[in-house]
Length: 280
Ligand code: A3P
Image 1 (cartoon, protein in one colour):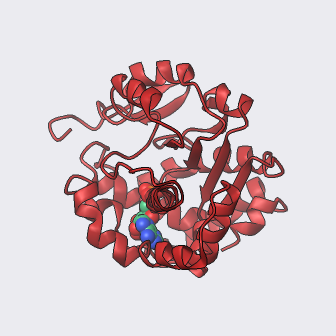
Image 2: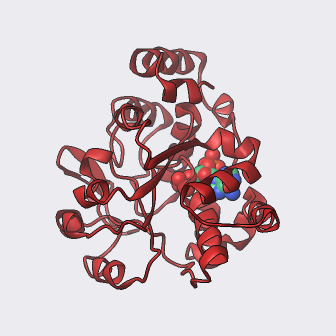
């Protein structure tokens, strides 16, 4: 993607921006042909909320609980890469680990029809924005020419890859009572990863011993994952495993930007359960 202009790196599909190399239009058009299975392990996260962290955790949980050999090279995004990848998904034996950054309204309907269990990860919007900004700067397949100020206003208006943080949050808020959906936050996971691993494996119906839970949590700290990340992210480990902290926004936001985010957050999410979980 290094030879492409910023304009070529991103395109609009159904009113939402997508990175053109990661998510070719051809793949997006064929997404609905994916046949969900009841025993799929589906991971959903708005970009930069901790998707790759949970990919690591879920691979370990499935591997430990079922003995299935989990691929550690490809990020399991259904909207990712070439249309041929959909064939790979089709042939993958259960339990499959699948993931997406796509808004729930655009997730293939069969996942909801089959009542596939979905783990949904959110993160406070300020740290998400900071992480996203650095990702835009450092990932060659994303436009890097935007200043912090421009990226800030694009994030606030939803003109970033995979769309508006607030639209995603409001849509999941409506589904929080659905028994097939488990919402966790980045902050909760940072606070107590063992509990996260325990609850997530239970939710998906996997039996793990307390020893396995502890071992998975220890292997999934930021430091542990960053060290191993060069094998799994084609030399871009440091781009995906940047800082791994809560509150980095304080190093980036101006007081005005912080206030602006607080106002929008209030208007969009105040009084909701997800809003309360994300109270930063
Ligand atoms: P920062 O940019 O704030 O460091 P995603 O995987 O959804 O793209 O999210 C990336 C963010 O999750 C990055 O945040 C990254 O550092 C952080 N992250 C990745 N692995 C982590 C881990 N094991 N523990 C805590 N944070 C992690």
